[in-house]
Length: 185
Image 1 (cartoon, one colour):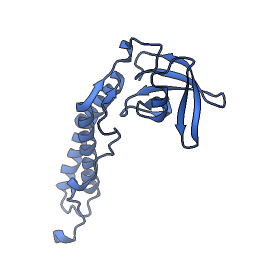
Image 2 (cartoon, helix red, strand yellow; image 1 turned 45 degrees about the horizontal axis):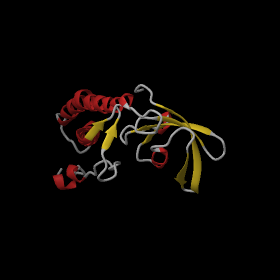
Image 3 (tube, one colour; image 1 turned 180 degrees about the vertical axis):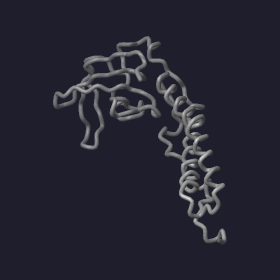
Image 4 (spheres, one colour; image 1 turned 90 degrees about the vertical axis):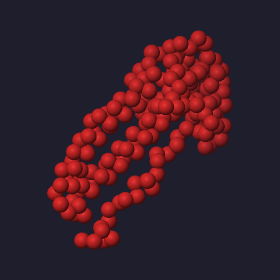
């Protein structure tokens, strides 16, 4: 079959890079555990997943007609996804500034790496840990240091009432407790 009729993606360079989640001009602060997670993901993709997919693609390419070869088509697509993620991780690790919260001297004030318990206007207590943009995981209560809650809490002391901008307007929250815990996974 003529290559003009084959729907094979040759526009790998046109694939969009992953969204830039770090505001321009800001440093990419990250905790030691967060940096270790980025490194582990990079090594896993580069040393395990990518070689496995390359092997599958080369095997599938040897089977002849690539236009209807699912292993080949999916493998090439997955290879592009892995390469794009590897480039993203490499860029993020290059600009990362590891900040060890265990070295924080002012432990009575909220800074990067702090675990903060606060009370909202309705009396509900919530706990968040302020971490880097690339390591924030809301399901674990980790929020990015550039998030509205982290910005509102920044430099606050226990007992301080701070104003938090929300989609519903400005809400006042009170800092209940500040802790700098050992780096948790």
